[in-house]
Image (tube, rainbow, N blue to C red; front, side, top):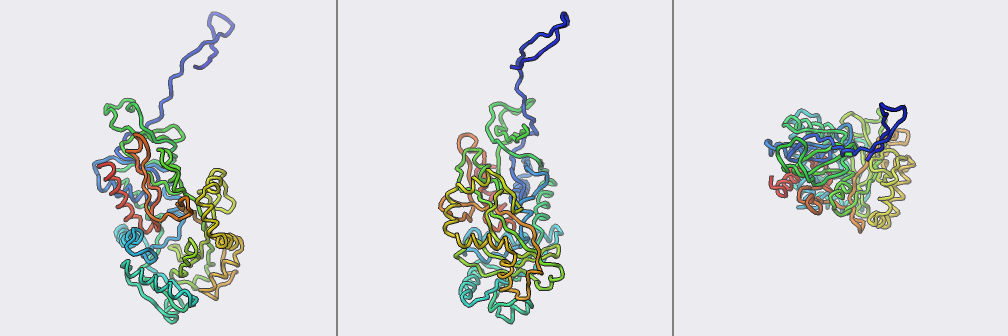
Length: 446
């Protein structure tokens, strides 16, 4: 009820009345067969794959930002990986190898620029050679193209300023602007008849009890997806690809809070233009199995710049690209999570070192000088940063494979959450899209 003062025409005084407010109906955009939430590179690739498979169905893609692919898809190294690192026969390995092939084919077909500049994984110490040879065996079992081992002389021929005693040579590795690729996926989706809505931050997914006003189709579209502004989309099925918010989106439909997303920021240095001659292609370290992340590397970019890094430190905000970016909820969620606590305890020395090197550029440069001795601190500047959505279980283990989830009750049978997609998700995006589309078809009988 609302208490309203009204003027009585028969009197100079005012009188009060009561009236019953009708509930405000949310603005309903329209009805669709499938709604996809999240327009990063995985969401866009999957939306594209689904509409190409099912051109007679209606699809809508919902994104909370003003533009598409602004976060992980737009803040990454831009590398097309070849599939060397992953366990032979694993899903990650298969998706990466197939994804790289599909990515090159797609860029050729669409006229998107890329460079197949190659990558060296360089051993600078004798103790790294057994691990390097093991990587070679992995790569061969994964059918990585054109893979080889080269000696110190071969390293200098490929990278004149790089020093090492042995290296894994991967000519098939390349670089591309992944955000440009992701936006092209979006264009394909729209050209096939899909609808994209931006500035739509989903905060509720639920089963509705009545059909939309004016609808003659009854309860054909029983799922309502609402945003914080009161707008609503009705659909038959929902797929979420939430990236940094995948765990929170899944909890809307009653899913477990685990695996939880913990944001790790990676800060890059940038090589000054007059020093670009020092690096021709990608130069990577031999991974150390004692540590959870890869380590710093040299990465040429499509715009001609060269990035050095990144480190890996806990981000105080899920979309915090600056050192002092802070969100109280994100920070509290991360610190209170048992999985992060265990990960930190297992890697306390490594973590402190990463933070220290993030503050003091000279310490980061010392590591880079192992590979290019001519590099000096005066040759680099602080560069951009990215935030990785790292899924963790409660034991502090990094979750590397697919995690699909639904939910509970009526809504659970009509929702599919992609809670984690195997890294490298950009390289593997078209192959990942095929697998997610298969899962959507199986669950929803499309």
